[in-house]
Length: 527
Image: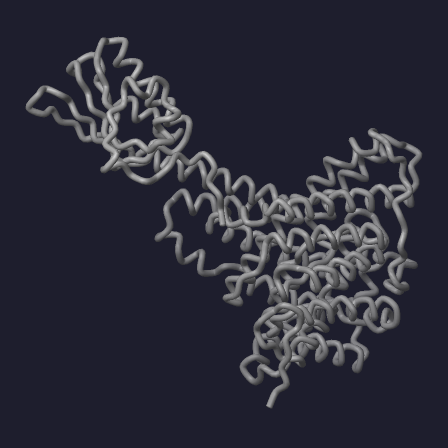
């Protein structure tokens, strides 16, 4: 019988062994990326590793999605590139150590913004992200993960590809890692295939003394991942308006990018595990983690979909795997740096290639002929923006805006008016479809004001007045009829509409018994 336990508030029973082994695998996968993201900004590798430890530990304990992994990320690192450039332009003599303090302060401010977002329950609005945008986000991220591995096939410190035996060895070991990861699940589910692959390839390389690139080769000369427990320090910067005016815009971007990437990752893992996490709780956890990261010498970050998928695919479902990953990463930093630096990059590259293949939504390609053209365009555009700019937040925002515009355009064309004249010579307009800002133009075109009889009835029983633009459009129509000396009756309007229409008592004939119960969408809440 396997031993199971429940950790913290996660209700599903979890295998103790799987949690630990998955956490160990994730810890190994965190090392090269944390180093790479720190180097993007020109920071010490320990700045990225400390961020991965602090972010991972805090979100594993407090986060809204058990099993999701957080750490230093490229999306956040790119924001700091701009901050560093602005700091150097503003303060030409600024020292590298001082720049770090400004960065730590920015991370703390970003964390406060994220906590505020969680307290205000803004996390639920991530549900407004359409599925084509989700597909584009995931596919773009898969492409980023895949392409980001190719620098490992270059000669150290150059843009020149490996040649001869060095290239063949790198390719062979990478392929071997991928084959092991593909085949192990077919034989046993007892251990994560990614961990088996990394260990087997590492044993082969170290045991046979194969000359190939290792983690130590990704470091600059004289650098090491060896360090102690993350040192605590308050940012030593001037506390004045000039400082805040420089840092706040970058902090807001970091907060936004971090929350978008984290909440989208949460949604994707929810779908994979068929469970539901808490977006608002995750916002607060991400904010707390970033504040802690800024106080403990880390560069901040957010959720990492690639590492989260490694964890989930390994069978982890509880908080323990994330805690183990963070603690093991700290152990690597403090006691196992020499061993970790010997790990072959080919094993980690192969692992990330398999993650990229597993991350890509291949099913989205099969739906091209079934999806509306607008959805296909949105998905391709979000994928392209994500892959080219590496700015996930911008890609998602653009995608949501385009999807909303496409939806509005399609619904705007659905407004219809059935016209008839009764035995008393009264003309009836029976309106069908939603009346909102996008359809007001077509709505106005339905009426023949000059040629209509002296009495008109506009019936909204099969329509819905959705916003203030729609109400104003009704106002305009009634006023145009009034100018021609004609009487208008508006039927089947909700009390909200009646209250907002000008001179309603003079122009509205309301049949209470037949009135719909809907209301104007003035303050829609999303649960």
